[in-house]
Length: 211
Ligand SMILES: Nc1ncnc2c1ncn2[C@@H]1O[C@H](COP(=O)(O)OP(=O)(O)O)[C@@H](O)[C@H]1O
Ligand SMILES: [Mg+2]
Image (tube, rainbow, N blue to C red; front, side, top):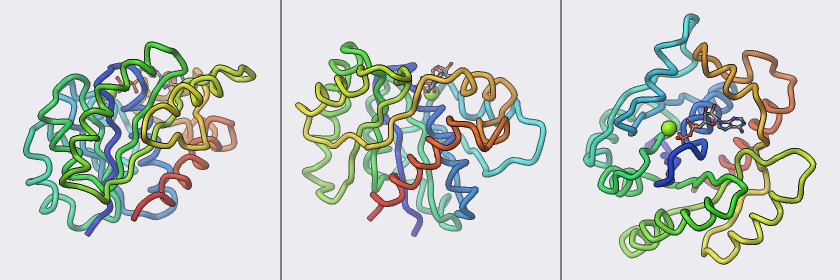
């Protein structure tokens, strides 16, 4: 059975799609068989895949439904790792993604608004612990501004929630938006750049959390 990682936050624009695409790429580069499931009705990950010219690194399928947990086992049986790019707002889809997952990652930007808004997804995750006691969860700080303490401040603010914050934060870097325009990732722009290095470090930390 594949390991399933959902990237969820009811708030939009926090980096769910960016992280889903990049973690999927980082793991595919380590020769894992990866499937990316776009669970957002807006279909951003599908748009990203459609903008791409070269060979896809991994397939992307759309499944913006509250039946993900039922449909995924058949769909994902030939893969090592499935990433679910979550939707904003839609609760029933987020619940289904949680039910399908081994690990839920919650991206947050270093802003108090994001810290407050995280309460919604934390409430959903708390609900889930009743029927999924083994579910792993973690925050990822995304768009940290290089050389500022705001990432640390936010990690501190997030410590009032019952889930850990991953060590690796992803910094604010224009290469993320630039690469997405062409259906690419920062790896394809320049695998030696800091953005790619951070992403590989993050993916390694994420893989270690898998049961
Ligand atoms: N670390 C980052 N540095 C710079 N831009 C980022 C970063 N993460 C995300 N973005 C940009 O922020 C916007 C929202 O990100 P996205 O992944 O679409 O969020 P979500 O899926 O949560 O709505 C996009 O334009 C994306 O390119
Ligand atoms: Mg998205």
